[in-house]
Image (cartoon, rainbow, N blue to C red):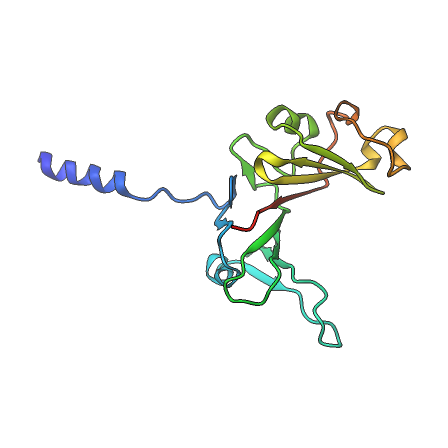
Amino acid sequence: MIVPLLVLIAVYSCKKKEQDPFAISKNRIGLLTSTTPVKALDSIYALDSIVRLEANDKGIRTSNEIEIYSKRGTKLLILEPRAGIAADVTIKRIQLVDPRFKTETGFSVASTFAEVKAQYPISKINNTLSTAVIFIDSIGAYFTIDKEELPDEFKYSADAKIELDRIPDAATIKHLWIQWEEE
């Protein structure tokens, strides 16, 4: 009686924990890792839709982005492979579109600026024509906040230095990316 119970416990404890398809962690986003080759996308997202940008009418590809949609048609991710055409090329950058993708602390595209700065150190803020680009080096992420959510002094200038304390806590994320370093 004890032996079968011990065998059952051993089998259960050895069983690999299933990966959360929406979890973000260091060098992992859902089922993707920083070493996942692009050729593996068809098997990873076999139940979803993969859209590769087609060549234009002159046969020239204008982008190498790959969009991933759920089986219900919701856009999940936009992947940008590293340069090259080799079969084992990996993913360089991922735009997280679906708010279900979250870190352990709950950081996602649906987070407010207050939530982000409470969880992660901000590494740098760049000012562009229409957005503030905010970098979080500790997780290899960067995101944008629309300038419409910033004080007036930043809305019409790409030269003004945007300080951390000048971004409203309620500002929302417009776009969120994770960028992986080449291994």
